[in-house]
Image (cartoon, rainbow, N blue to C red; front, top):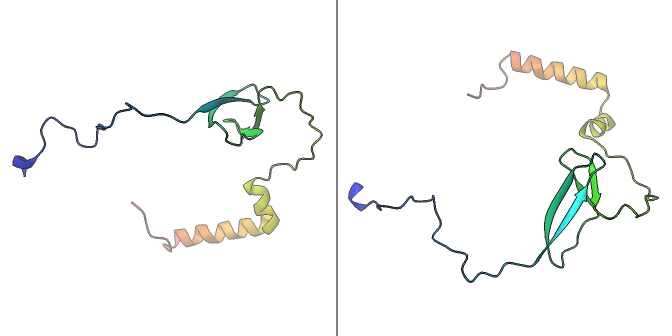
Length: 115
């Protein structure tokens, strides 16, 4: 096998393609700013629908820069978290019981060890 190996080439490490004669799609950079002041710049293809809001890295909703003059009279529902949706289906007492049951199953060896 050593006789047939390629010499001088790291297979998979480098591409043999180049960017010569490649026309990239036209893009527009759009800036979003969250209430905490974080600024995020995202490239969008020209002609793409650009959202008014984007989720910031801190988890808050960031608005497009320059949209401060927009009216905030829109009725918006508060963001539902996973915990909120879970509490719609079960009470905290039911969750405690279920957790204890699952922990006991684990202690009894019901679940295999993943190593």
